[in-house]
Length: 282
Image 1 (cartoon, helix red, strand yellow):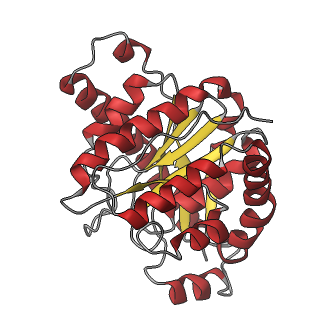
Image 2: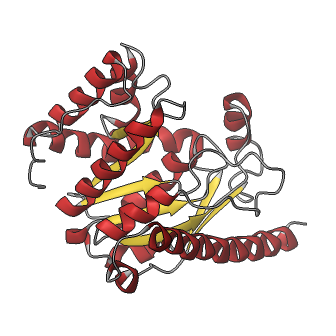
């Protein structure tokens, strides 16, 4: 069982009152050991099964067993490219079987619909049982809050027994070429520099663009033998050398470049897997 989180930090600086209230509720929830343990159990035993109902035939993961040997006392950070609204859910769901059962899984999420509405906290609970956190504000008012998000995620990782799933590119990459990645946000380089977490790069692409297409694709005739999405996990990254350097924007950018290079390498493997699968198709 994980140790309870330390008292939640005071929110604000760019958040509305509703957002601050919903953030506070999530933080308070995970300061209660029993509630936090319930969340971990529910997301693994209920949430995972719910998502697999519409995900099971669409996705095939590769090399996710690499998660088994990670040092979870120093936490892990799973970093994937971002093409679809379902990317982080899918990676987290398939990672669960390889991550110790006492490890809390956390994913930052856009504030829209989850934190900026009074009912957003209920959606957070029913989707991930209070594990979507902290909110990311993409509007101009998000600059001040963004600094706080960096510190919140860094603090989570430093507590240990946490797996954070995050997209280095920030927003979704809507370009026509899925293999043309955007640069990592500098804030992620700072998070990696401040933590001791092992970093796992992941590349995936191919999910349908709409919920209706998503469900029909999962249950198409050949879905179980020809998945639309291959998620490839690269070798874990050790940033010890970069962490030994004094903190600076240049160090953060260097960390981001190395991370995106690793995701790009995973994309090469994904393309090879896709070509092999296509060749098998009659």
